[in-house]
Image (cartoon, rainbow, N blue to C red; front, side):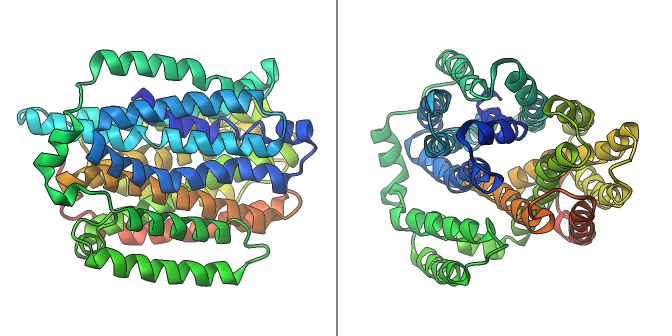
Length: 439
């Protein structure tokens, strides 16, 4: 739970410190946004890669290696003397934290296989709620820490969390079998599909670089992305043990629909996390702490509403509620102006707590049921890749809508786009959830 939470908390904790970091290094918003994009890019590539490595080397080994990288990234960011070093630290954090979620899913799946009478729904729910709670704490925690001790402590906080994670892992997580035995048991197909991994990384990187600046679209990057995608699909279709099983994805339409729902859901979430918070600071005039406190009820509600759905295994109900809230939330945001009372803002943003909380619970449980047991690590990692694809799309939408300043009209442009996405999510949810069991 701690390891799988490190990525969400590092994603959100920096949101309220970007302005302070920009002042420290005399950098504008166009430069500091790379602190967000760098972690997204590293995580989008790192999550399925770590899942694949965990299947080859063992989830415990990969998880501990990831923790060491997180500790190094936190220390590097704390001591950074320029913006490029800080961006590098975020890349290291993205790679290191990518080990947490896919390895956790593999350990849960292994435990369930060894204990047939056990019900993994509660544990899966706990993983989702833990990530939700830490993501919720990221905004107010980042604002509070930055106000008290400066933005550097938002990097330093990773070090004690890593030490705690290492101690608990060594004490409680069962050892992986020796690598030699794992290779012998799995046979020749256990070899890593390194060309597939490289092609996947290049495809995702090219796509995210294109999406990161739609104000000045570089069409050559889009063309490169399409060429790399065609090469990736052609390569993986011919490979005996592919990194991305495109044949399975083509045949498993329910899992593909889950990935699409995840992308849309997190596009909505991150537009609120970064777009709304920027508007609250620049147009509404709230401080970093004030913004964190305003969205805290939304985040807390997201965690609270997740608990009963997770305990009872209400997968389809969670996904339907997510889709309905994805329409109601943007509709309410159309009321926002620079004079909207704070209490109205709190109530309307709490609707997005349903999107955030139940979206994670429902889609994670859906993936657990839909993905083949032997591929759950890579499948879980790919789900996080689509999470960050949604995040980068949100950055592009925010940049296109706001321009140099977060205005009321820019916010309403974002909201209209979110309303359309919510309607699309509502439309695709029924066909992608028909075969899901209750728990």
